[in-house]
Every structure is written in C-alpha cells, then in structure tokens.
Length: 324
Length: 194
Image 1: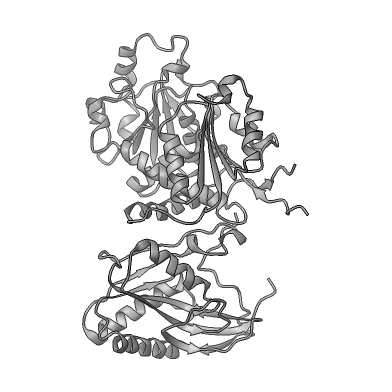
Image 2: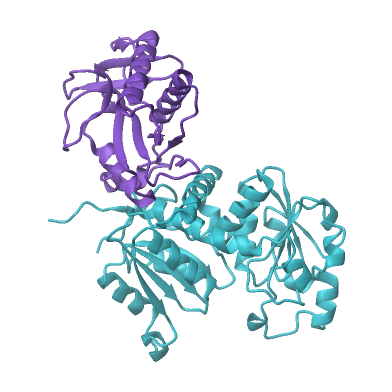
C-alpha cells in the first residue's frame, strides 16, 4: 500500500510569498520569540522529524540559526557541509540528494554556490521533503529577508509606506534580491543604492527605485540596510579602491546623522567593519545587527513549523511531492 | 492558504441551533465558578488563571474580574496557547499560533487554574498540561470550564463546571462571547455539513 501523496511546499524565493503568507510567518515568529524567555526553550512540535542542513558554501550564522531553530522545535538535525564530505570527492548534488532522501529527510535546508541550486533540488524529483533555500549563489536568501522584515516591523511598527534603502553590492547580493521582493510585497518602498558596476542589469524591472548616490537618499529613510562587499565573488574591479567605495557608499557616523531620528541601520552580516559600515555605526543603538541574529532563530522556527508542523504546509505553492 | 484560526466557530446553523445558556445564565455560571474557586482555594491566594485561546482567555479575564470584585484584590490572569502541543497537529494543516502570556511572577509554586470554554475529549487539556510542564512547576493545576459536554477520551475532569451538557457526538457546542462574537450564548445544534 502506498501512502497518499503528501503535499509539500518549499521556500525558495520571497517572490512566491503573498503578503498574507509573509505576515503569517512574521506573526508566528512573534509568538515563537517568546520561547527564548522561558526556562525550557523547546517545543515538541517537530519531534521525530529530520531536518538536514545541506551547506555547499561556508556559513556560520545561517547554519547555526537553522540548527537552533530546528532543535528548539525538537526536530533531529543532520548537518552536512560540503567541506570534509564526499562532495569534496566529486559527488554531485543529485547523488547527495538521493543519499539524504534515503535517510528520510523531512526538510532540507540548502545553501548552494549556484543560483538556482535550491530550485533544482526542490523540483528535480530527487527528494520528497520540503526544501528551504538558505542562499543560492547571487539569487535569493528568503529567510534572511523574512528576518529583516521581522526586525523592521518590530522597530518601526508596520512596513506599509516605509522607506528602506539597500546599499552597496547589490549585484552579488541574494539578500538584496529577496528583500526587494518581500519588502515590496509588504508595502514598503525600496531604493537600491550602489555604484553602477554593482547594480545588476535589469534592475529597472524590479519593484524598487535605484540611485548611484547615497547622501540624497538618507534623509528620507526609515531604515538603511548595508550590504557586505563580497570580495570572494569579485574577480574583477568593480570599484577603484576600497577607500573610495567606503567614502561614497560606506555608512559612518557623519552619514548616520543625516538619517531621521527613528531610522535603523541593518546589516545581514558578516560585516567588513571600516568598509561598508564603520565600527561606530555598527555598535550604535540604531544598529539592529545583533537583534537580526536573534530574530533569525524565531523566523526560521516559524518557517519550519509552517512547512512541516501540520498535515500540509501553511504557505507556499503547494504541489504533489515527487512520488517515486 | 490553509491556516485555521482558533477564533472561527465550526459553523452551526444559527436557525437550527438551540441556546442552552443565554447571556445572564453565562454571567451567573461564571459568578458561581468564581465563588467556588474562592471557597475551594481559600481566597485564591497564589492562584493564577490561565485561559486557553481563543475563548478561554476571555472567560479567564471575566473570572479574574469577578474574583477581584468579590475579594478586592487582583489575581494574575494569563493565556496559554497549546497549538504546538496538540496531539492532532499532524492531522490538520499548520495553524496560526495564539498568544501565550504568563504573568510576570511565573507559575512556579502557584495554583494554576486552566480556563476553557468547552470540555469535550480532554485532549486540549492534556496538551495544556504538557505545555505547563515546560513553563514551570505549579503547586497544583485545576480546570474550570463553562460547558462540559462529555465524551471524554482521556482520564481528565473539570474542577469547576458552568453547565454539564449531555450531548450526542453528532451535535456541536458553540460558545459565543461578546468580546469576540456578535452575541453572547452557548449554542447546541447538529454539526454543519461543511
């Protein structure tokens, strides 16, 4: 007898989320955040479920955050990183996926260096579990955008009509892509700021504005999100010198003074202190950087709960699981 | 979207349903429960009322207000969401969560009185007991319900009951409270087709 095909859905891109679904995730995270004040930081909800962290790219905070989230929901967590695994012996994504499937993964949290890696894993029919994109190349990083939206909502109340500037290396930033779509869905107005070389082609078609200058944008912002300059993805010169980049697009105390009183400064981490953000700004009261890390656990718990907790997922495009 | 909200009622046909308790009767039942709590707990010292969302929370607040009125002092009132502890979590679509608000002094060593609208299978209460286990160690736990409709599936009983209501399994009981619904009544009727 075969079990009836279970419906699964994935979290691959913030473009797949409706405003209603995104708010459901944020509201759920809000309730789950209270868990961190309790003596026993654990819920029995995902007992007996297995969550695999499949990381083909280095990551500390995202992997630890997902691991903490899954463990707080009592799921079993398997960490699989490409370094020191059979991937370094040349095993393909497919074979790795088939191995995980054979182990009975209910969800796979995947970070891959290739844009579309998570999509491939979700739709190739290799695995039956839910796929959560934890960053694919320069494409998307939806849980980061959700935790950013959560942090903004906590600090600013609501996102409707709020102005958010996303500054720096937009070209290589999956965080920026996920944020642009999610913030637009939630009713915020996004402005991308960066040198022409670091704004992607086709940015005109995104639901946001763009600017090559930071200073005129700052006084109108409710939040500034500084992006990391991704040296490891840059094999050519995108700007003349780091000093010049820092002078034109870095956030220092002087620039921060141009922001409205209530505005917050965000950074997805890891930071290049002194390049895109000065230490003084990063450590100021306006900075939400450590808050973002703490919020990440709550938001990822919400995503895991809503995708795995019930008989069918509470958000995402539902589809029949690959029944092989 | 397939989220169930606890606030939604199962949808009794209002024309076919019979009101077994009206607003004054609910008021009288709660007043009696408040007096019983005071009597049985010797003035409700160290007692904490925890309502189970959605409607248990409103009932807990009303009981708290009544006890304050009778005794002239505040009694801590909170809420306890049991969604994550339900034994049927995997049988239904993932639900939105309700608020858990534990009074500031916590529940260690206190007398927790759980408050819910309808006691039926007892599974909600079992989930609440599990949830409390993760929150602290109360001195004792009691249960107050507005309606006990029978059909227990677990060895659980209520300490304070507003009304014992014999029902058949084909029937549904709905509690409407003015804080959240358009009327105030306990309805008994045959389950809707939907």
